[in-house]
Image (cartoon, rainbow, N blue to C red; front, side, top):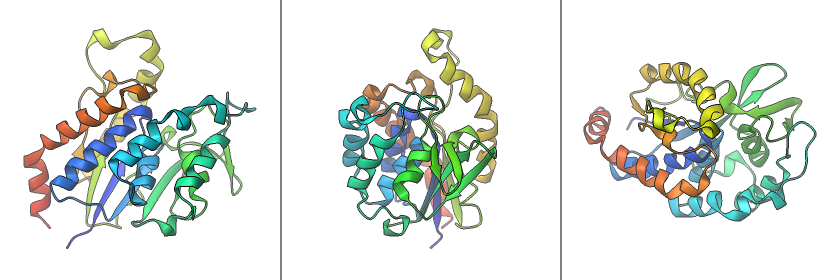
Length: 255
């Protein structure tokens, strides 16, 4: 049986789409042997690899406690530091260890001083997830093992690299496709759109290295920080992936 690796992109609240994609893939009999992720994709990868169900992950990551400003602290290099998240991660990953996960995962973060991507598959799980999802200017950088770390998506928003050569078949899941309708060009969405325009060609170019590339269309209809849309995002990505029946069956045929 060939091993399957799945790389999950960042995307803020749109990261909930990964849960819908993974659910649909499972219904087609596609289960990952390893995962990689940046930012929101790293969070989903860690919870998934720890054995939490879709419903549990949704409840954890969309709960008011997870995003409550009461758990944030004013930082020096960002509006908040990420200390409040650490408590929650320790609660749900009591061993705080990559090795305790049921399948291997790789998490991407950005060393903002050296200007390079860092990939982690061991170490302090909570702190590394925090680093990977540390949005610039919003959160204070995470210091870890001599590195000053920010969001993995800055330099690599679809980290297929740790999986290349380590699995037989690779799936990339990118959840930041941009709408081409002028109706969606709201001022509040322009920073999000500008960032993803800047990186989209680089990340989409990785599709040729994946045996299956899943990119639900018009994901920019969902705001990067609009976590209240989580159920709609989840359902949208699930239905989109279910519609890829022919592509997924072709992917599975060569196993």
